[in-house]
Length: 416
Image (tube, rainbow, N blue to C red; front, side, top):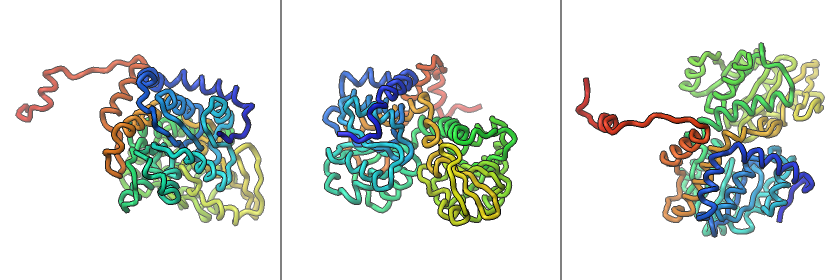
């Protein structure tokens, strides 16, 4: 069973999936290794993650490893309808289409739970929270799950701290081969891609305000700077703010940045980063968007209350007109601009993130019943394996310690 927007788009989706497969060599090696042994045989995976060509490669890999899969999108605007159609045509149970209402969004997740999953894969923790709050009867079957993004990890750690987490979770987001690459290079490139597709604005010479200097904000700031923008960073964390300053960017509160910015992007995971007073301070023609998981970082209800007119001027670009004639442009309805207005991260970087998802689910299938109900990090061994496999695929070789160097490393008597 599936529900997608248009099955006639399947052929187009299959071509995109083929492209992604050709650019995800780590996943290809894992499929080659595990399609024979099928370590996920007997496992039922419920996934809630952006439906992109890269996600399709992950889904097909899980099936190749023996899993049954049921899937939904994790954001109302991030599903690529041709990819959903291609997966549906191949027999994957998928419930996803672009433009979901809130009611439809949760309905889709509900459908993925009907086959009583044994493993969950989430991006934002909506599926996990739904099971815990509404479908407690499913908890006895679930041996473990994974979480893809920073926002979801925050939610799950809060659940664990409160004693409310009922099965073990692996924080795939916290793998070095995920957040140092997916979050930095993937978000940096794809967010600018989304901004350019929605606005076609020249970045050179503009003041580009980045709210949040975590891994995602760092990647965005450097790429905007590389395109010729004057980058301003806003932060609440003193260490991150200091890092941004040392990296050569201006740092100031949003109250000040709002007055000088031409383009604004939020990457914090926190609500109300840009609110009514900031919209009031902005220049005529300012462009505002978000790349965090939820749309709460921009307080759009307050912007709407300040406006006398709203209209779509380009795909994924809404113009808000104030009474004095000033215009503010909001991209992708405040949703993830990189997925709603573009295609999301490039396949090459998702290769590592989804390799970690794949390997983490295999670990949970083997060990989940013996793990505590808490949030686990990806092992250093897995991180190293993914990095080594990626380097090998890129034709890159690195040095190794000699036996003498290993001895020196552990000899505390060695000195000057």
